Image 1 (cartoon, rainbow, N blue to C red):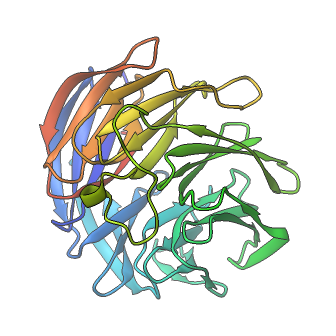
Image 2 (spheres, rainbow, N blue to C red; image 1 turned 45 degrees about the vertical axis):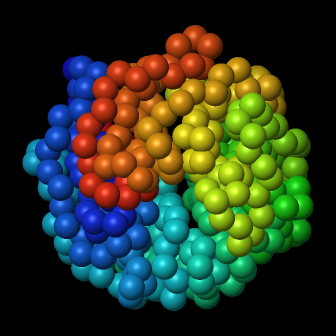
Length: 342
C-alpha cells in the first residue's frame, strides 16, 4: 500500500508540519522551522524540493525534503520584489512562478541543478495578483489579479520570460474579486473562485493557443447565512461578508469544491462532461476559517484552519457532503497544504 506525505504551512509560526497519510489517518512526522512567516509553497516531488514564499523581508526559501523522516532542511534563500502569496512550478521543476498580492508583482525564477532559484525574465506588475498556474506542457502561465477582476494570460518561454497572449487578459465579472485558479485534467477548462462574490468562474481554454474565454459564473457559497457581497478594503468579519478562499477538483474532475472562510464552509458543485458547473449540491461546515484545503488520495478532503491550530480530514459522500473523520493539531495560521507520494 502506497503512503503519502502531507505538508501543512503554519504561517504565523514560520514552520511546515509534515504528516504521513496511510489507512485513512494522519501520523505526525516532523515540524520544520522555515524562519519567516508567509509560507505559500510549491513542491518539486521528483527532486524532493520545497520552495516556500516568505515575507519581512520578501523572498523564497528552498528546502530539501527527507521523505523518510518528513524533515525539511534549508538549502538557501533568494530575495523577491514581492511577498509571495502563491507559488507554482513548471512541470519540469525548472521554473518557479510567484504572485504577490500586497506588492502587485508576478515573478519568475529559474531553478538550477543545485535546486536553488535565480531571477528569470522581467517581473510583471498588476494590482493585487493572487494566484498563478502553469499549463501541463509548460508553455503557458495564468496570473489572477483580484483588484482588476481579470486573468492575465502569457506564453511562458523556457528561459522564464512572460510573453502576453493576444488578448493579454480575459475579464471576470466586475467586483467579483477572482482569487485562486486551477486547470482541469485535459486543460480545456479553467476554474477561478472569487473572494467577494462567492462564485466559481468557468473559463474555456484552447490547449493549442493557450487562450481563455469566459463561460459562466456559479454561486459557490451558502445563500442562507446572510453573507453580503464583499469589496476591496472591507473587513469581511466585521461586516459579515463573503470571504472566498480556495478551490479544488476531485480526482475524477466531476466535483468542484470551494471554501468560504467567514462561515467556515466547503461547497460542492457538480462538473458536467463539457466542464460547465451545476448548482451547488452541498454546503458543509468544516474547521474555522478554512483558507487552504486539499483532496487526499482516497478522495477525502484535508482542511486547514487559519485561526485554530488544527487540520480536519473529511469524508465525502455521494452527494458531496463532508463528514468529519478526524482532526490533528498543527501550528498557528495554517494557510497552505500539499500532498505527495512518499
